[in-house]
Length: 352
Image (cartoon, rainbow, N blue to C red; front, side, top):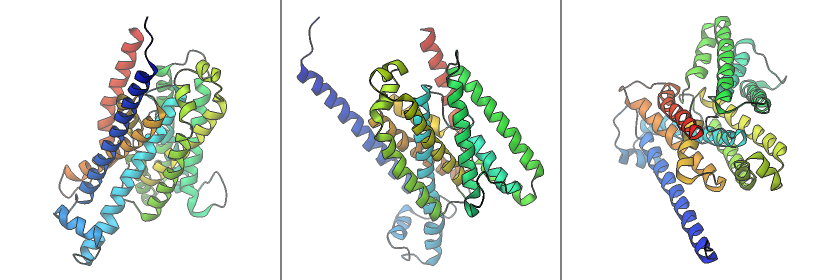
């Protein structure tokens, strides 16, 4: 067996790193193009050139177009990008700490739990933390997401719990909170029901600059937070025994990621309601392109998740002229085939 020269190893590593960096750049460019197309898509046939001029100068084509672009289309487009990134980062982190490619906030019931927490605030005015005023809905969503993540973490420590068992456990959580959501609907007034339906179907229609600022700030903290833990997260993907042998404090790492996942998922649900499978599709595509190296996997997951939700938003406005479909319906139609393909791939790998 011949030894591979160190220069060849370094050259090969450098080439792979450059390829992965190029993929990040391409994903960012695709996201930018999708973002611009989305701003130009919607009721009213305005050329992309005109929309671009209004973005550069709000009053370039009058007050009406300024309101359309700056008060509606731009917030919706930015919210799609931010929420897609939030969900994809949460999914990537959840898949890593659970060592399960099928894990994400929607499939494991975290989003449903957050929605139920929000519905408690909407219908009953119940808050898990008293005297929080206007934050009651978002905070309820966060606490219920955190509780569900904690339950999932405890379930992973049971003997004989594999990927398929975890998904069945997640389905049980999902249906439990879905039933509780139905109970809240039964008790709700007409106005409260409309607000709950918003949570259950997912919509970008309530985008606002305040939500965009909060989401961007959270993403600006969560992504570097995850990137600072790329080495222990990558080590964890090699197995708990290997990671522990490398000096990784697995218990502390999982608690840190648990809080991060809960905050990301709950914030996304608080902004747009339940949007499924973005946290599954984004990391799945990223893993296919760059593997498990968290330095590239995490940011590419964020970019792909943002791109997928941005494209979904475009599609929701393009299927029927003048009608905007809930994005939760479309992401489910996109995500189910990916979900099934991952199950079949995982099964073949185990049988092989």
